[in-house]
Image (cartoon, rainbow, N blue to C red; front, side, top):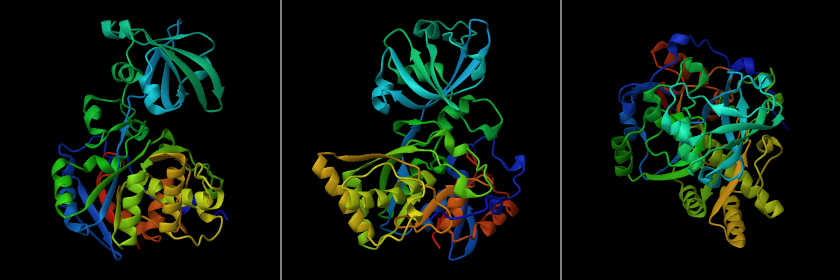
Length: 405
């Protein structure tokens, strides 16, 4: 049964002056809010390892942000911005990025009403020779509501990943109210980013440095990776008053069979699981329901938005993960590749994540709903403390470590 929650109950005053427009000079110099057993305190992010339990498992999202914003020009001179969301042909990320002449993407197109049937050329005001040689063009194949299918063609035999690096811009969040700058190329990316595909960074990971990671490993904490490609939907506000009317966006994720075994054994041994970022939480908590599908239907499918609230589930996490592993083995697969639309709101039963490292999120957002669910409604006190103690908010802002209530 879908929970009825008024999104206006998750509002707070966030002045523009409190939104961090740029990262600090040092990643791990950010402030760190600690919430545990109802108590709030603060430290510095580089001290995070001191607060984490020994012999736990820490899960990070190793997705990599792609320069997904492209600027084109119509023959009339009008400018069109194309924001690549997810690959369509080929539909698999690695294959699409490896394409050397053409491909198709689902995109958000600015000024799409001004784009009829003409083919667009890449905007190259400085007549850069390298961009001229690539000769990137865009053709509008189909409109699909707020998104469009766009076909890209180019010359020179470069893989599309290289085309984006040369022609695209990093899509920093709209609430920064500025253009992408040189600093964003490095800092709007985690130090452990690996698999290309996100159009927004998993920002909780932006604070980590090699020295912080080394200190975490020194405590016997296993570092594990999952990959969930973050979509532009992460910035979408909840427009309906009742959250039950909000439609969650789909995000693809990949977890290996080896990781699933280690996760099962970690939880079975009573050890803690630390999730870095809400994307890691969505991935980890989606796994339980993928396992339920394997138990009841023989195979998993994309995780529906409201499945956690449909009924009570009696399966243990171990049973659920074992069912996924049995499915992978039967199919000769070494990884689970699915999409999730799961929404985590107050009333959600957490089965995997015990500790969450995360930034401070926008008012009336699905991410704030997730935080409220994690701390059993105590988000007000956390955010009031952050406001009163000059914490910086959103993507380039400060961090928090939250112990599940």
